[in-house]
Image (tube, rainbow, N blue to C red):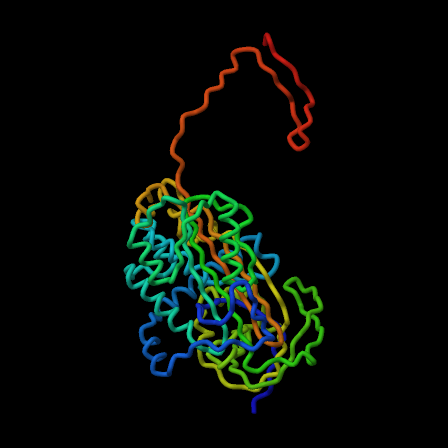
Length: 425
């Protein structure tokens, strides 16, 4: 038997995948890793084989590649490099897919190119996403929920083709609400909370405004196939990138795992449920660094796709919980999606009858991942906000050509430092 390998750290690139709506979880009720998982509807082996044959492998590859390019773009932003960096490529892709169905011309071409859909037609893209969800949302011994929604202002007439696409291919709820009102913000936040089983309580802290908001939400709850014994969890040193150390609770287990290693890294697949889903952990060796590993991943992640052997591993895995929020426009622009954010250039003419002048003014993304001895609970939300260019308005005239009063005012306190009447300037 090969020498036992020891993994003592974690590099996690999360691609949370689509999800079963028949989960048994009530809105707003967190399942919790320690609870018994609700068994979802299973596909038979033949049904699964038939659906798998319809899934476009190119779309899966495109999604993963987009996720890595976005991960790189966010890593280059100093705002996000001080701590963890965890995103959900699936959630972001699905939210952008909703928006993509409303675009035309160069705006659509840029988005398709960025998402890896350049040589596909709209029907193929939507069918590919539908088939992928159909495969992922059935079975696996885990709880998976995905939800999409389109919220639009009262009176906005969505084009029938757009409404049909988001409903049929993405199972999106379409709701009318005044996005400028706090009631709408609370309703949207409650929807997000319900669809993520309470893990993400809100996506907006003020009314989003605009003409439409397109949202994807994901909830994942998977118990390890072989759980870690809490009695074996011990505090150990974890070496940070700058060489300093901190104490973390390290879960310990020896078992048989799919394992692979290269000159500068070790990789392991830790299975959930019946083994159909797993956590891939890639650890740089002590002679290497995370920077080097990132460069390898961004250049070619196919190295970690196959050729794993089944080995006995003494595994040490940190127990952790991480949450992050991102504003994605700058990163998406750096990847080539530019016109959709430009009020003068964006073309959302396929979304609504009044679609001329629509553009994306925000893309918000939130993730949370909780890893414990029982398994992993995670959620992600992506919200794409569509607004419109304001119609030019007549300026208000104020010509100070007669006696007037003035005050020099402290803005924060409202205190008037000077005041007076000017009768003769």
